[in-house]
Image (tube, rainbow over all chains, first blue to last red; front, top):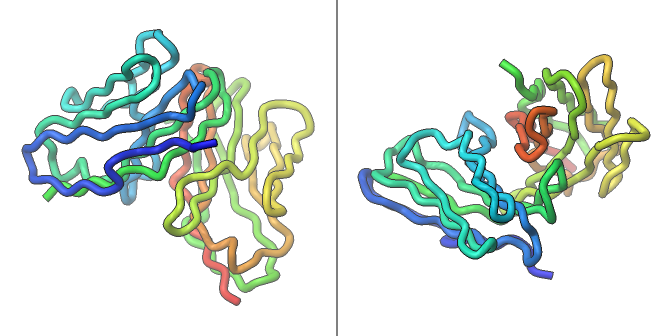
Length: 114
Length: 114
């Protein structure tokens, strides 16, 4: 079946602009995760959604970052007032349930803030 | 700070050489352990995982990993690498206090030359 999809694949924006990144998880997967992969920092956890529960936002680096998941499926990660240090690949993953299940990753969105 | 360490940042091998990539974690208690691989231009894929049972885990493409609890290690091995194994390899752990959050190592870049 279809894997995790993300859009756009690449995004170039100017410092100070807002951006929205989209993730479509694998159908039926109740858990959805966002990570950031940046040069020198490796992969960092950002936020996690499980069903209708309140999300785990513990990895969000600042209040400029937010995410929502509508209808338990599609998720949008929003970065407000982008900064150059936000440049990275933003990865989305989903898993059938929570509790250490294997996470399946999408191709990522490469964000460049000029 | 609690973390996941991959001490080999860049490994260069010739085809047919044996491979061992180190992974150490610093969490006490029960953890789930993963190795993910990212081939050039592709998204992260699961190589293998350990939750419980036999500490020697076999994954795809001839890879295996051994969980040694006393050493807090989960090293990845392959007896004979191929050019197609050129990729970046990430060790990841779900810590005991939050089994929904993958904590990644910084990755090891493997280059295999024919």
